[in-house]
Length: 380
Image 1 (cartoon, rainbow, N blue to C red):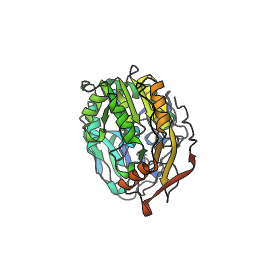
Image 2 (cartoon, rainbow, N blue to C red):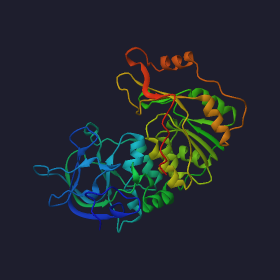
Image 3 (tube, one colour):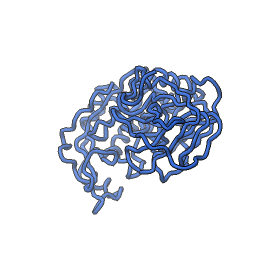
Image 4 (tube, rainbow, N blue to C red):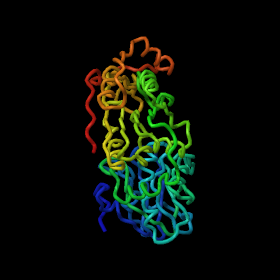
C-alpha cells in the first residue's frame, strides 16, 4: 500500500486507489475558515490518516491536527468517509464526490457517508443538490456531516479518486463508477443543440459581457438556451444526454455535464476568464467523455472588481463577438449568416448598470488582460 503523506493523488493509481478500514477512528471538522485547514481523519492511536486528506493540485488543503481533547461522542456502525462537503456546487462536484468510487468496492454494507463541512459556520447543513447527486448515483445512503470531532466505530477511507489538478482525469475506478452509476436511470430528453448559459446567475458568479448577443445568435440557429440552475438535476442530465452539439460558458455546470458526456457529442467551451481554472474542466470533460472539447478563447478583455483586481470567479470576460462567431462557424457549430457585431460601449455600460456594478462596486479592466488574452493550457 502506497503512502499518502507526501504524494499527490495519482489518476494512474497509487494511494488514490486504496481503501483503508479503520476501527475507532477520529474525525474532526475545521475550526478555521481558510483554504487550507487542519481537519480530517486520525487513526485510533492518534496518527494522521493521509488517505483521508483532500488535495488540490499539488498540495493538500486538509492538514494534520492534534487529537481533540476530552471525551468524544461515538458514531456507531460502519461508515464511508466522504471527505470535505462543499456547499459550492462546482467544488462539491469536483471534490466532495472524490471517494464515491468505493461504493462499487465495499466488502459489506455501510450505514451512511460521513463528511466534514468545508466552512465551520455551516455546521451539519446539507444542500438539496448534494442529496440529488447521490440519488443520481443510485445511492440512498444517509449523509452525516460531523460539525464537531467524534469517534467512528468503523470508518472506510477510500483514496481521493478525483479532484482538481492532475487528478481531474479521475482514476479508472472513479470513472467506471460514474459511468456505471450516474444518471443510469435517466432517459435523454431535449433538443439536439444546447447552449449552457450563465446569464441568469447572480453577481457573485461572474459572467460574460456579450453573452446576451451570443444567446440570441445561437437561438436563431436552433440552440436551446439552457439555464441549468433552474432545473432539477435529473432534468439537467436528460438534456445533456440528448444534445448532439453543446456550447457552454466555462463553469460548474460543465463538471456535471462531463459525468454523462459521450465521445460522439460535439462540445465547445467558451472561456470567460484568462486564468487557467478551466484546465480542470477541460481535463475532466476530455477524460470522462473520451473526446476533447473545442476550447474557444475569444476574450477581448477581462473586467474585475476595482477592489480585487485579479482573474477569479468574479471576473466578467468581455467576448470578442466577431472572432467568436467566426470560430463557431469554422468548428461546425453554426452556419455562416454574416459577421457578428462587436459589443458597443453603451451595451457594456447597460449590462454593468443592470447588474449594479457601478460606483463603489464598479469593475475595471484587469491589467495585462486586455486585447491579448493568454491561451488556456492544454490540460488533456
